[in-house]
Length: 227
Image (cartoon, rainbow, N blue to C red; front, side, top):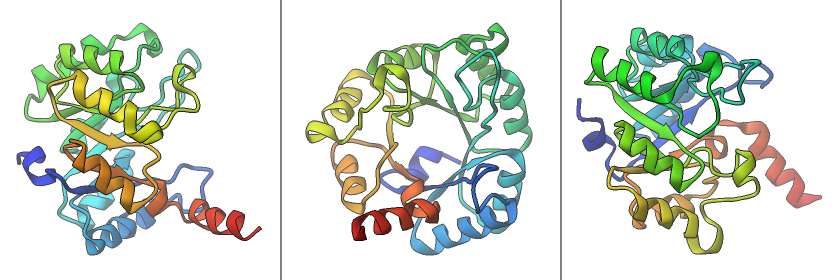
């Protein structure tokens, strides 16, 4: 499967619910993926081996796999180590996304070694670099990632308070200009209009999560507006 051809200028829905969230359940995420498919999604981003396996039984869509795991010696928790990568390969994710920030990884592992491992063991699997800055994106390209994602803009100390849509999408435009590999728009894209705009600006595809699949946050937006 050429995942970039399948997802070109399309919508990927992030179907995730962490343990402390009301929809935490592989069964529910499988049904959420069905709903995303019915709504027109062309791909799914999913967290955990259990969720990926369930989603694969429910829909025939490419899956961008991650594993979120807290480690005491690192701030990184999106596919932080080779252990998570191996599990995602076993789960047959079509693409693996991982934190590609400059922060130190658990167990003194390096991003370079993890990328090299995937390229050796499963060169057909795409690698997505979840970045927070243009400098991280440029390094990820040099390391051999297949695409860059803006997932972590606003979620690191260096980028706190930032949003790729701020100042007429200035930050997002800078990612597009900085690298030659595909750039995926993800992170705080909470309206259909923003999804359309980033695609017009050059995003290869767009990933939307909370605005579609976290009803507690969707409800809060309505509740806050009413208050």
